[in-house]
Image 1 (cartoon, rainbow, N blue to C red):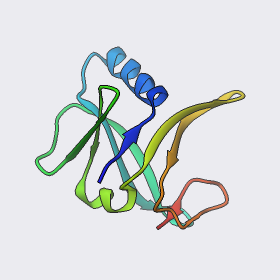
Image 2 (cartoon, helix red, strand yellow):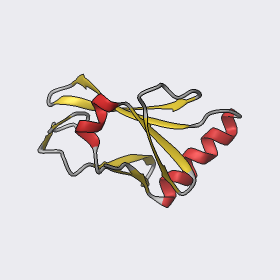
Image 3 (tube, one colour):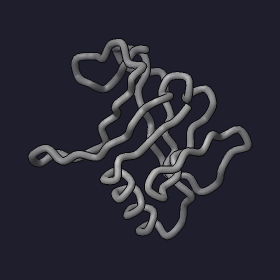
Image 4 (spheres, rainbow, N blue to C red):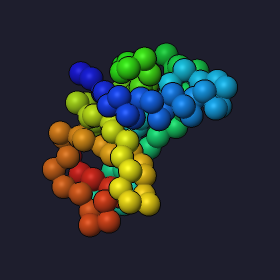
Length: 107
C-alpha cells in the first residue's frame, strides 16, 4: 500500500506548508459526490489522527484515513501547469470510470 507524490507535487506542497508556518503534511482522501460517486479531497494536516496512514515522498508526508485508502491505494499525486491552469493531477490505478467534467470517479 502506498501513496506517492512526484517531486514537483512535493515541492508545491512544501511551499504552501512553509507559507502556513505549520502543518505535518497533506491529507488525501475521498468523499461521496458527483456523477460517478467519489471525488478527491485535499487539506493540510496539523495533527495526525490515531488511525491515519502516513506515506512520505521527497520529504513531504501524505496522510490518508483507512476508509479512503481502499479507493486510492497506489495513487501518484502530480502537480501540473497547463496554459493558464494549474493543479493537482491524480494518477489512480483503481479508477474504472470518470465523469465527463473530471470532477468525480468510480472504482
